[in-house]
Length: 83
Image (cartoon, rainbow, N blue to C red):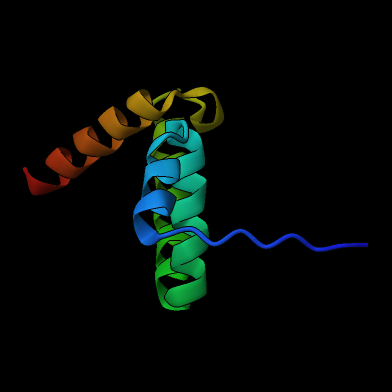
């Protein structure tokens, strides 16, 4: 089996990433963060678990919310905690 290697510049990689759908960009970001900052991944996981619980308290199902709805919910939660 032959392995093909393609060399891309940083600019080309960034251009390819910018073309990804939002959900795939998010997955890529999370994977990169896990690789570079394991403590961040743990904290982010805790934050998502809390967001899921708070969504359920409001009668919302986190898994069916769109990215925009999730962002809006988290924004609401953050503003509540500051009040």
